[in-house]
Amino acid sequence: MATVTIMPSGKSVEAAEGATLLEIILSAGEGINHKCEGKAQCGSCHIFVQEGRKGVSKIGREENEKLDTIVGVGSKSRLACQTKVLGTENIKLELLGFSSGL
Image (cartoon, rainbow, N blue to C red; front, side, top):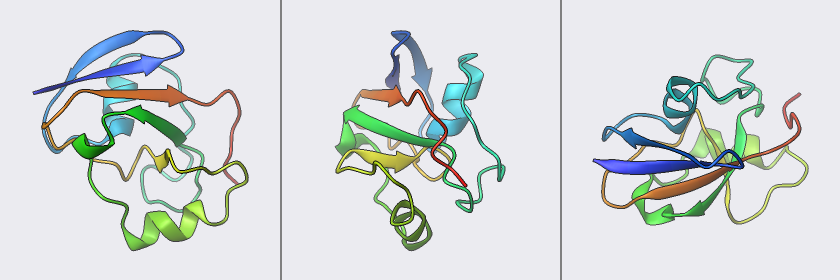
């Protein structure tokens, strides 16, 4: 089981293999936009995976296409709804201070 640290709060939670980062963030009581309910259609759950990128699933086609439409995307950008924990290493993610979705 991996530990996910959510910044900027610094809250750490245990994450089961196969859970999405969106599910983990919400279960930790953190607020995050998720307008399309996890379907990679809105981009509002855009986050940065700061550490442990090998511990999460690879970017799929739908996620990549949505990230291409968002301003402020970088090499650490992911959609929390599409990013699954592999359980191989701990993860540190950063919630963004703005809504990046449509």
